[in-house]
Length: 160
Image (cartoon, rainbow, N blue to C red):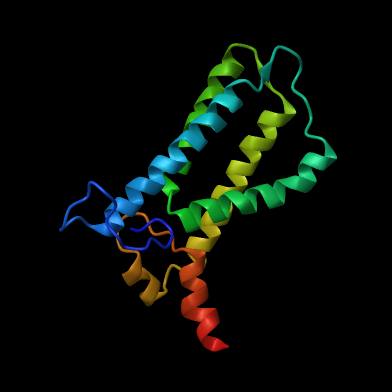
């Protein structure tokens, strides 16, 4: 799997015979890992002893665009596994903190709901493209999450 559209050149320190797609994947993962660690740390700070807060109307209005952003990040960045691990950690922290009597504030609710809705969007995306033989060939393996750019160049750009 590649991460985005990499140039295919081998960076310094990578010798001949190195797989550019593999190098690109590792570079991309190194770029996203700190981002998701920061989000997880932020989420861990979103618990309070007060009664659970309600998500304000503005939060509900921004939930769709936020989830769409994470959907694009996961699909175009090919970071499904990292995203799912982060979401799993968030759910584990949520369960642990609830057992301790702490409630999630509105910021934490927004982040958890955004991630959950993004997983739903990724699932719908994969379901929509499940039987596409060309994308299946391009994205082999256990985790099949085609990039939006690939779908666009294959199906939309060629029809115009």
